[in-house]
Image 1 (cartoon, rainbow, N blue to C red):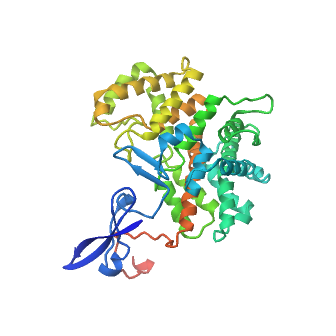
Image 2: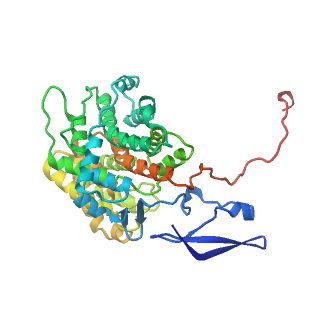
Image 3: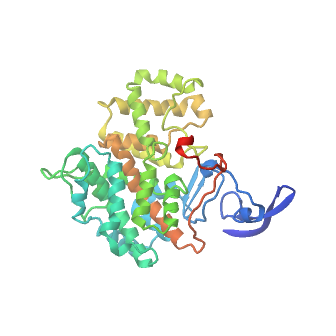
Length: 431
């Protein structure tokens, strides 16, 4: 952050308070209210923190009006089109694109950490068979701190590095194990000769009774899903990770907190909600009925997977995801899948209908990722765990950045209190 000579003046009860204004490298100026309470005796009120910068970060930048998403300055469409997930992981964690030797070393370190402690298999068996995979992931990732004591000291830079690699490497294995457990199939161990996305697909869909060969089109689509969900600035789950981290909690506990937050349907469950909507529509001939309902202001129905809270233009991630969706559907076909037929027709209408075009209700990344994951054979219960898997590197990168920040202090939001004022206790017989 670059300090400037600019300042803002706030007048409260005839008292003028000068507040410094910081100019970031991109985005709007930021009014620094850090000393507002000390100088003026007041707090600010900002539900959802929609106008408040909670931290200083150099990792990810979003310009919703332009439809722009940058990781360390690199646009997401270039990264998703030319790079791959583990290279983007390196970029997020270390700030620069790696040279070939550094990338090879990083990929090797991640690959060699993909196995989980064998005793963790017993931990899974403590869950009911019908437990949601996200519930399992919250518990198992949090329990990593009980298995990997040698990487929980946040004050040791080397232990922070080891913990980061372990999380990126083992969360796909844990997610696949959660899936296998939910369908009653044996766990599949990772293989070091496969790339990150292919390894995950194999751990999810192979069985001991027969060989399984990962289709490169599906592997590439999965890698893009991971890449496009890797980080998204200070969203709810990332802010949760940072808040947990501010207390000095170990990295496994912090990421488990992020997974728990991501589980919320307003956050990580959007692609699942989108697919459930497509199934509610059911068949192509019913689309006009639901389009009419979406346009009716008096009808509470909303088309899921269209538009975005942050992006006021086209979601830049959706452009790349659409390409993958077309490739996957071209490979697997939609002839016998009514849900995918509805998705394809609904996408066409949304891109052409003046109502959607004028309001910029374009298909977003959740629309396309839901279609792809469904076509691959994943149940909707696995959509959010896959999101958590992909976002782990973002949480880890934000955590590492925060821990290294000399300005770090424990998070302590204020409140606008509306409860009762002082009251004396009344004994129960006199109430």
